[in-house]
Image 1: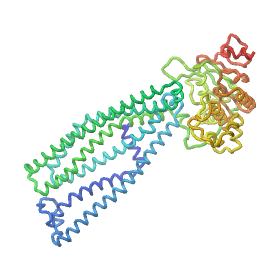
Image 2: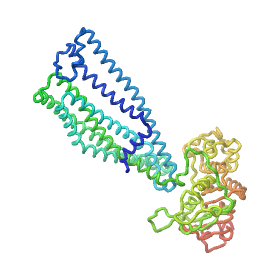
Image 3: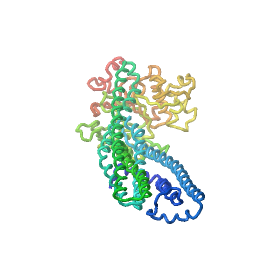
Image 4: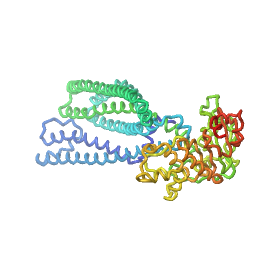
Length: 603
């Protein structure tokens, strides 16, 4: 049976913490009990020795303290006060230890949930990511995750509070059943009339969750596109967006505060009426003695805040429920979209590479992103990429070139048909090895914030200095890296923003070569290079022919003129394939149209 979202995380907390969690809960209840007992017993103890003149004969068990009347008052008072101080000190020491242990459990549980969710996201397949905004995932791993773990502990404290409230009710009933039942009925009543506040808290929590996602998405877009914003003078529109968002947040926070304030107002007004009515009823109808009256009032003062605390906890839990449901949905969907059948081990640094002996082949491959659509992104794809040869894939934008590359890399799986190596269909484990045998250089190069050395070593942590410089020489990056103030240890900024577009592409190409792949995939990898450096890299790639399989996605003649075969894709279908010279001379074919003016210049 599927557990409610919050109880699911409570079960996770149980498995993570074990018995130490319940020891802490028991300690918290014991601490509250000691606090109540210390205050409740102080007055009858003082009455026993005659310091306070209150009738206590109807208090059960009071005769056990009769020995205090047989010793001098001063000594009796010292014994009573010493017992009280010991009780309070024990409570304070217990509170300190429980508080520190709570912090350790809470922090550990947050990290446990965060790592588990991140592990699920890392193991999710490529289709999972292309259907979601990156900023939503970041929001889930930050603010939403914090709300989930906090609400889990809040639920735990709520359940513990229920237990402790029950204990205090039993103590109160031991003194006066009628008056305790009266307090209990009042507590249940105020909890019921506050139901609408909990419902409103949940609605506001959902709105705040959506606003948080909107904020992170907008800010991420702003800083990712800050150059476009500056160049198109869009600062005013961006400021207007954030100003309007801030107004929405201010309104929702005000509404949340109003819900809490209204709830507290109801509590305070109702509690003042209850206290007055309670004292009158106790005195007039129940004929309570002074001592019992005082004890009942003390219990009431301790018990009544428990009901309001329970109500406040329920409101906070309701407010966090949208985040809880969001995290649970994200975890379930990521676990249901596991890449390579879940074989990917996030703690395993390296996997073996697969050896390509003959060819990489697609046989009758069909693929579509939307399974409900009748249109296929790729349809009836049949191709063969021979080992240690250079294959160029060309086509108009949206033809399906990148989707085909994703299928060849094992990032996507065909709906029908087969992608095979050396004539055999690959298992998930072999696909993982294939992916490790590929270096992919995208058109939009991605570099992490850090040094050049850090960005290179991420694909081969044990690479020596000589290997680093050799890969930089290959990509024509060695000269500009050597001229940087700190060389390989130069910090290049977020996404390599301190470098030019061409320099970023050369570094990404160097990183791809450093991996020593058996298959190199270049997606317009030289588009940002000047003609001199492009010629150097083309020459270097020529040197690789015969020792590595190269797949190139490109439109530029200079990139594909030395290809062993060219595959032309249009609207998800292969419409031409063959040698470069043969296709370029076919004036009726799509390939010669794509070459356009480049073909005329070349001839």
